[in-house]
Image (cartoon, rainbow over all chains, first blue to last red; front, side, top):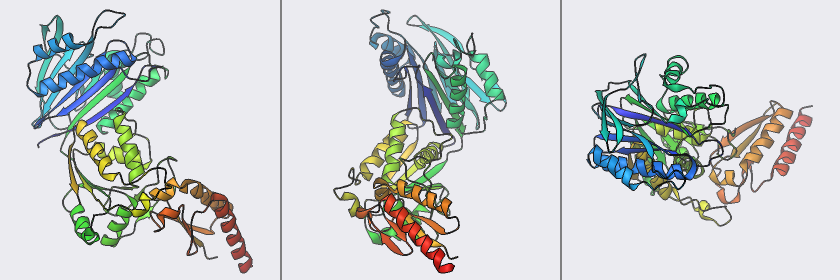
Length: 381
Length: 85
């Protein structure tokens, strides 16, 4: 793997809507990643259904090698027709990036894709074709390390209409913000959240449209390993800890008992905070050589919940779940080392739920992270 | 004056049993009687099914409520102060 894709997604539903009408789908193939951002007509449930169908169809068919005209045709034919407007419509952008940095973009009625290369911010243009009655722009280029690709829905370019910017932010406004206000050296998630925050401000915190930002950053692959749960057999403790510390990679320990085992085996001190940044999430700790130590099941459940919601906001949060999620999103290849020993006390009846759910939870987490374009491997110990 | 060691468990079970409320009590007592307590967080005190657990000056207090903890610690702090007078 020459390059990895650091992916950041941030989004906000139109004021008063529960569901966002923009949907992002990321599909990681053998050597390349397909990213689709689709914006369904209108807002709320209807828009969400249109956008979900569009992004799923586009991502799956393209990943299977179906040609673009056929994909556009299939989408137009499949989308349910809106009862009020009597049309079925969604806009979308499809991006394909392989591990060598070859990039292809297909834009159908969405705001232009932006390329940030060093200090230059360029809206991508290309050949325009007419397929099934729609104008489709195709661009291909070679990316290099550090390049950033930004996809936005029209909620971003229209941000501020009816509030602080009568004509909306526009693509030029977005470029200006990117050049002057946003720290482009931050990771993809932070950049996405920062762009979203600006749009929210321009809309006076009441967005008139669904807003979605996708940031893709090309970088050297970051490898990470998470150890969660004590090994099934106690005599494997030292072997597992040794393996956990082997190689050049980032590390995180998830689980109090697990952290105690690591501290004991490495003969180091485990420091734990007792300050709660979020009353629902137990405090974090620290171990030498480990990026983060968190509690186990409750924190993991929260991480899964946040990932299932789609767009995440973890930039300024300090609780264990947000920090763990941030750590996971920063990695490209993640090994989940999952211990299968169950704490007998967790199985007793008077706790609000059974805690012997680690294996199921970690499998769900692995699935969600793969959906974010990460290469995930689970090792049961 | 020698500090009183208070170990509070913030592990999964104790968290679910209400360790947060105990942590707030400790913070409150610590503000009221500065430099008297040495608060240490633990991920497990080995008594998960009888949480929340606090080990106060070496003695394990199980299923302790915030009110009980506040009273016990304040009494202990005051007793130590008297001993030092």
